[in-house]
Amino acid sequence: MCQCHTCNWLYLGVHFCCNTGITDLSDICRKFYGQFNIILSVLGKCSNEMAAVHLIKTYCLPTLMYGCETWTLTDNSLHTISVAWNNCFRRIFKCCWRESTKPLQFFCKTMSIAHLIDQQKMIFLAKKYRKAVC
Image (cartoon, rainbow, N blue to C red; front, side, top):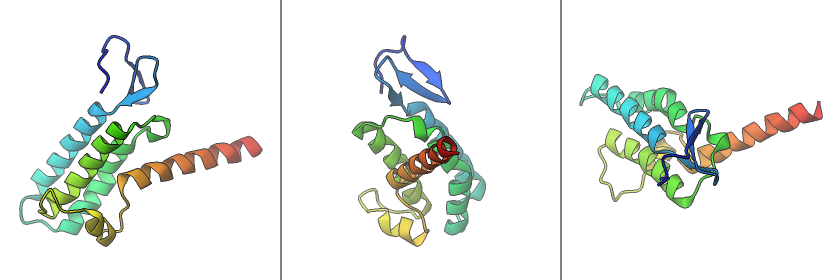
C-alpha cells in the first residue's frame, strides 16, 4: 500500500502511487469483498456451492480484475489479491485457512488469480499487436 496519499492518481479505477507506477489495490479488494459478502448473504447458509462460485466468477471477478492490464504488481500486491480470491473459495466451501484452494479451483474449472491476470495481459497485448499489424 502506498504511504504517500497526496501524490496518488487514479486511472481506470486503479490508484497509482507517486511516480513509481506501483498500484494500490486496497480499494479494488474492498469492493470485491463487499460484492462477495452481498452474494453470500443473499444465497444464505444452505446454498449450492457451484451456484455461489458461478455468481462470484460472474459478478465479483470482473471487479477484482478491472484494469489488471495496467497494473504493476509487486509480490505484496499479488499476495493481497491471491488472498482475496482464495478466501472466497474457502468461505464458499467452508474450508480451513491452512488448506490449499488449488483442488477446489480445479474442481470448479477456475485458475488461480495470478494465472487469470497473466491471461488478461496476454489477451490485451494480442489485441494491441493485431491492431498494430492491420
